[in-house]
Amino acid sequence: MSMTKALDQSQSGLLSRVRRAIQTHKLNLRTEQTYLHWITRYMLFHDLRDPAELGESEQQLFLGYLQERVRVSQARLNQARQALAFFYDEVVGQNSVSAAAS
Image (cartoon, rainbow, N blue to C red):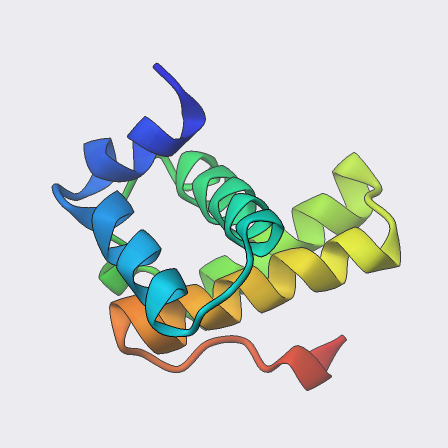
């Protein structure tokens, strides 16, 4: 299964909702790819649970994992944080971890 198909495995139509939100905001292809990457990794990290059930603590847990265990660069951590903020604000319809919380 491709990584992006995991989004649809977690919730039917989730992948198309993410893509529609990206198109609505006229984000470029590279941004779309980056956001889909981080959103998918986030969903897989949480065993494809419904994102509406995942709150700020789960977002922080994922970001902490990236920072402490995977040891991503600050730039990549910021990308992941921005992708989650977009995902929760524009797709799920909930508040996300603030990008200023870095």
